[in-house]
Image 1 (tube, rainbow, N blue to C red):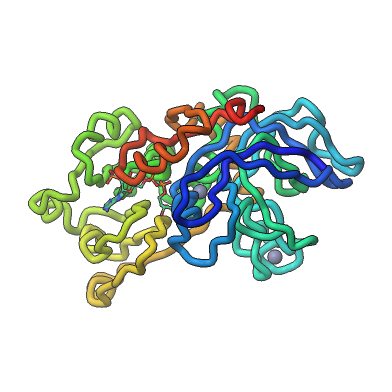
Image 2 (image 1 turned 45 degrees about the horizontal axis):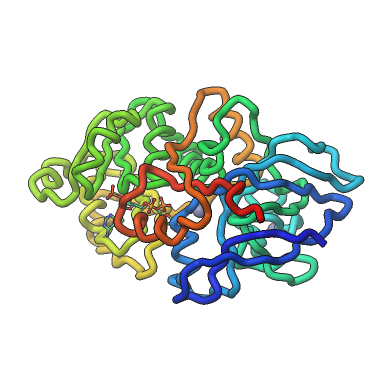
Length: 349
Ligand code: NAP
Ligand code: ZN
Ligand code: ZN
């Protein structure tokens, strides 16, 4: 067994604290990875605080992992010691259902095994995530990471990146489309980068006036303050797509109003409280709401390769693991520019 240092939540109401546990030794198909960086996703907060229900403790959050391979099982073909590797939001799935066969394992009918707050498929043991020094994962669920990009900025691509890339691709968003990105946080800033790279005209819809200059630096063509009623009124019937990344309770109706006829709101943010949707808002101009969950392994690799080719990384603030509780508090205030990333070297000893 592999002694591993981590930060864990022991309950939904206690701060994260140092935690030691053992990873399994790599099996024939497994890759052992020394974690270098792990991004901090708002889903980590939702789950560590049991805001979605069903959380299990102790919980080692973290599903935006990059590191270096330290050992491989004797049947592994895609990785060797010394390679860079990434792990995202899931570490296994049934591999047999239609969704798994089609490469959208995130929608596995048997339920994917989440990287944390979930269960190993074979043993039923709890899964522990990336706020830790190492991880052991079946090679089919490990991504290849380019040596070209700064690694701390690559880590958030494994969730924030793929979660925004995937629906934009699925819906064919690009040239000639007007896109509103709602919420400028970890997901929102990646959404801006991808939508701009795909050729869309992008408006940042934010509740934070202080983020205007950053939105423009990220490539957004326009910025609109969502708390300004006059600005929101002026934007009615403006967008083909709104990518909604907001993590807290909010009014969908207000933003559906900004869509054109046949417009689509893409929901990726998961507020703990369900939203109410006024039917009239959908009916009057044949608008739709579509949800999207991360992305499959094949598409995640495609996204990582696209980012390496186009020099796209996340804007990050690197922290030591002991700053994780402070980072959560700052994220809840919208005070993150635009992703905290844990330097896993700070977990050694
Ligand atoms: P984040 O970095 O904390 O960003 C969320 C942003 O939402 C904030 O920066 C803020 O942007 C806005 N916001 C927060 N509270 C708000 C409020 N009360 N009213 C209006 N806007 C508010 O979070 P994240 O990591 O990007 O995650 C966003 C959400 O996506 C979370 O719910 C997370 O669980 C979910 N998620 C879903 C998937 C998926 O597969 N679908 C994957 C990853 C994460 P402004 O300051 O610009 O308003
Ligand atoms: Zn995430
Ligand atoms: Zn499956």
